Image (cartoon, rainbow, N blue to C red; front, side, top):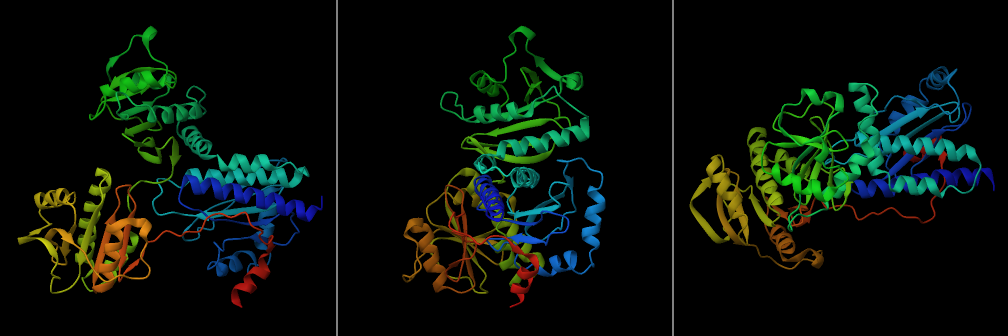
Length: 480
């Protein structure tokens, strides 16, 4: 096989595997690579989705404006390093991107990039994913063997191992080398427990794993006799035991092999814990949220609507920073209440000086949402069919409101009546933001008849893509 074609195949194969894997773990993700195979080779870039456009000045400054200082620094860094040893490199800290860079005697330099989604629990598993891509690229690029599909498969299904790699690294930093608690089997058991129902109900409660040598520091309410302690892999038994700690501050304690007992004390640092919340849950390391889990898999999402576009709209309005921030906080509280309750709702945020008249249940007088009891009432009113009407005076003016308007050409019949009614109403009324929460948790922010936070419909493709190009040509192309 032609070496140039083989090298392009290696890079394309690995990049596609990372894209598909991260798109399942997070939202749709793009991936790019800057690399230099040999110390005297030209700097090349592979960016089929244009994720790096807009950062050209940074690349020029680092790679070309320092008169070879960057390349000499890499040479000094890998000097004397054994073959196969990868030395982490400095992160470029590009806005909106997660990256991982390394250098070695086998492959002079490489830096991987992917999207930094705003709703991620933690970026660290994604960094480990990119690190694994770098390791596989070095192996495949230098092996000269055409059978490289295994790398693609590994990266498509790397979420559990990426999380495990990060947890193991952090625990070694804090606790030293540890072989007692095996992290990958624990993560598999957590997923299996989350999929197991007890009398039709999903798991709720907290289970955490502590090193056997640290068990003496745990204040137990009670312990299970040694010969009767259920093994963690017996997920049906563990699911039954979780009933004892659900809806409380009690927790099940495990040494990684069996359940030891029940405690109500705080979870110690560097302990892995699973917070089961019905049809989903969260994986924690100490107090740090690592990932969520649902539908039998781990995911990066916090499962909370960030609504960055709504915050920007309010800040750009003439409300003033203090009032716009408070209004955003109130709306966020209502949206999260509906999302957690798994019911859809519509919020009409009226920024007009004279409140728009809506058909529905009009409140007299309007309820100030600054009052906690009124905010709790508003959360309950969200469950009633129709929209709730909130004005710039931070008051609830109505509920069960009907939204109508003229038909528009960009309606989406796949989204249902609530969404399309909001599109029509927003298109007919100025200075009105409509927030639509679906029962399956997506949140749409609609302004002037346009969903301003619409997800991109781009999906990773396997069509022909141009191979890597020299970074210098890429930068010149950005100027044209």
